[in-house]
Length: 184
Image (tube, one colour):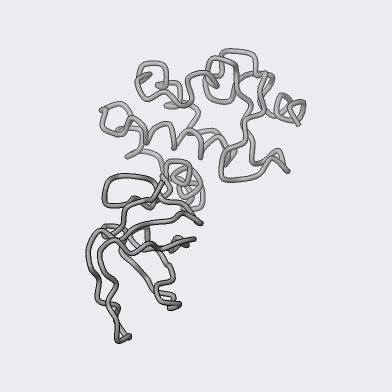
């Protein structure tokens, strides 16, 4: 696929347009199955792609944002978002009129997955064992779970990082993460 990218880009990096392209970079979250999801990059752009302190370097996207390829636009937009508080980047962002799908593609790489955290800042994962840090009345039942109750093999609630599921007294319940401590 790198050959197709080099042909499309004239052999140059599609971000900086000044150095030979040697890498076929897949713009996440897309897959590498088609060249339209990739950008031809040079080693310098690849090396700096995750940096957040390279404002001067990334001014190159002032030009690449106008590239007709959606993958180049999405990656350029993502880089501009990293520096949106700077005048040069906010100026470019205010001028460019991209397709909404390209903007969503660019922004999706900046999203940070929600992490389930217990009351003490420990990361919770599916299958962990937790201990209740306070007594909880279990809604819809006739019992309460006392402080110190051990809940084994929890499941994370995928659309709410403040909730987990676990069994207490053979009853599957939803528990707020702020009331549990990971049991190591």
